Length: 300
Image (cartoon, rainbow, N blue to C red; front, side, top):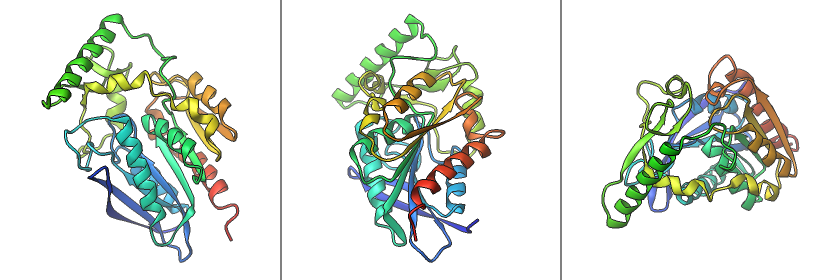
């Protein structure tokens, strides 16, 4: 186990500054690197620092960042989720880690969870210099939801998205909706136990805010990164939560079947169970083993 230092770092993406933590293992030789980011509206202090610490102790440099408009990163208006912008943030983060002294630019992996797991599939499908990918409980496409969404809620989300899109076109402040909640909440993403689940990964001083600009809704129907898995040339590890009420395990398995070199690890938990004990240590161990196998096997 390596000793690890963590430092603050910023990089530019689309004219704004993204905030990141850079984890460096104490080793004199160039090391592989992992770029990491969270999911839907989430920020780095929501248990991703725990994963980053494990990966760094295993000898990997880690760049863990917040997307523009979220957390400690810049970007106005706040809580604005743009798939296009977030993919640009990934590309800028990868370039930043590749340029770091002591990091081997040929051995860079991506690690994304939930909506971030969607992004790592899309990025790796077009950046064939990526050496390995971990897609943890990833959004792949929206056709097979885990739960039926009542018509009234669907219409309410569409109305909110239309209102927010109009605000954007007129230069007005966003129309926000609650991001995550239980089924009785008027939130974008709901499931039984979701409020307790998000609370379990969110420290008291977190930069996370439980709201999002409603216009994001229109992006979900057309964003299908799992369909791009066949274009991913590097090994990819899919982490599945079998009781996930947000993301259908069937869509993840279908995406994995399209990839040229995919493996799956499955755990008996809901969406938030992979972040905390009693399963966190097992998930982190399995993902670390995958990363080391593909990032260090050929290193001298």
